[in-house]
Image (cartoon, one colour):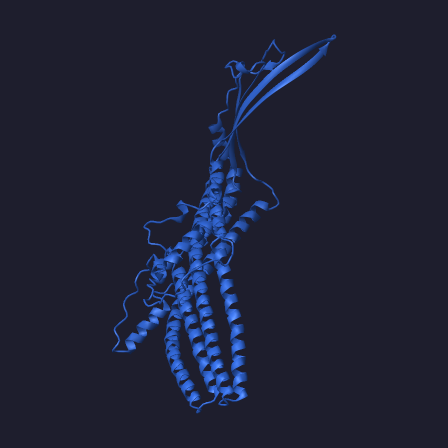
Length: 513
């Protein structure tokens, strides 16, 4: 020790650091520490017993494909069905609807749900950096200035000092628990990226569905107006024949009743159209007004959708991939929780100095340098560490169950939508023929009514059947489109054909607004 005559303080010369590595090796060789480490690692076997992937038996083909193949074998005149084709991207263009493609781009830029999903992905990416920072030393600088007044023999002495220190701390990741936590965050970020892709695909599908629901409601509105016009013409003809004494008052009452019923139906169709328009506008991220001009037309779905193979779905559906990443993240968290029970090895170092002037800080003859290493082994925490490890294992098991459920639901969605496609095609073909027959029946009923052979009830029933069949035909065309969108979404194919497209590389942001 030597005294600083300027301020009366004792100064410490440079302290030699202790032999850290020899101390570390001697500590690790302690039998008690080794026994505690072996005891803590006993629970790691539970983590190893967790499955690496979903234990699901996947068939070679979709069930609808197997059924078609069996039917083709029974019918010798029918050619053998071809092998399933791979799922194609760019399904949005298959509708040949430029207006829909335009609205999809608007939704991708403005939809609040997609913006929220993008923000969650960005947050998850930042969490990887936060968890990874523990692998690096922590450095903290401190600078202070003090003034002390000392009264002695009626004389006041002012002492000013400035102090500065640089503290460094670091925990050695000997057991890899910090690495596991960073890995867990990385898997979580990857899962969030897949969820963003799923949200984007879902948004495009929802915009497509809402658009064709809007078109359908517009066609239904036009049909309701056409139906009202038809009943009004019939009612006018009956009124004229009644005045001539050719028809009874009952026909007049019945025809006028039908007109009022159609006026009510027209009002309901108009409300459905306006409501679907507001839903569509909200989905685009716009104010739900009713200002939108468009040509109402539903595309005809003729070609079948290539469904690929069931096994391919596991690597293509973003929600399945997200569930796989979340499961891996939980396993990494469980491994980190297990290694929390191991001894922690840390190093702390500091460089400090105290002077009366700033420019004299950290002169070599006056610095204080320390380096301390230590090993801390948890001994008794009332079972908290073990319970946290068990909790992490259970959370991994829960994540595995969610992964299996997500995968099974994905397979069910594909099977249901493929089967629904066949049923809707049969229904649509039948209803188109029904429209033709109903039109012929109405023409004949009107001719026979004019000739006095049939009564008005027959004409009324013929009109109802015709317009009812026309209404069902429009709904079935829309149902085919809705199901076709569902098939594309279930199969996980991209809505665009852009090569090597990764939507997470250009995330939408609220800050750009």
